[in-house]
Length: 179
Image 1 (cartoon, rainbow, N blue to C red):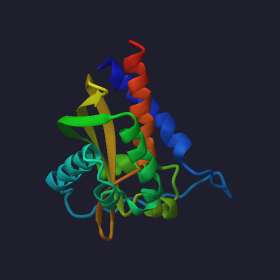
Image 2: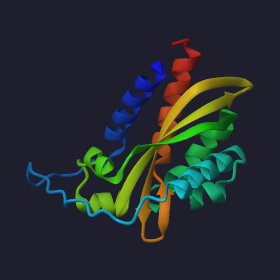
Image 3: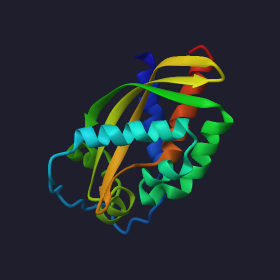
Image 4: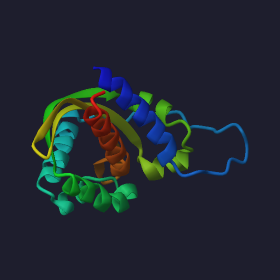
């Protein structure tokens, strides 16, 4: 659990870093109140997360790309290269619902409505995924990632593989340094 705090700090930091800078014309950013859609299809989203990590394990660029939000497609290749170059394998231990669409929108309030629509979709949610990560025959247990998904007109997709890569890299560095 002590790694969870580090992961959260890395996640929040990387969220700030990964966002494109925008010019604000005024200090007040208006965020449209969230309109709640149909119920979140938790089992479907858990299957998407499972399929995503299986595709990473199989080095399947096509499947990883098809499960990634269109805004982040350009980051899939470098993320998959990182997984391949570091000989990473992922074994999901558990998937837990973390953040509903209202909480998710509050977390991303720095995004205007237009940016949210482009980078997430109509709504977003987050799950905590506990993994065992294998790197060069060394297994790291108790590895936690926060997987964000966004709903577009064509379905639900995993968000920001570059952020996932950053969190994985940082967490592995902590594990390897004995922290």
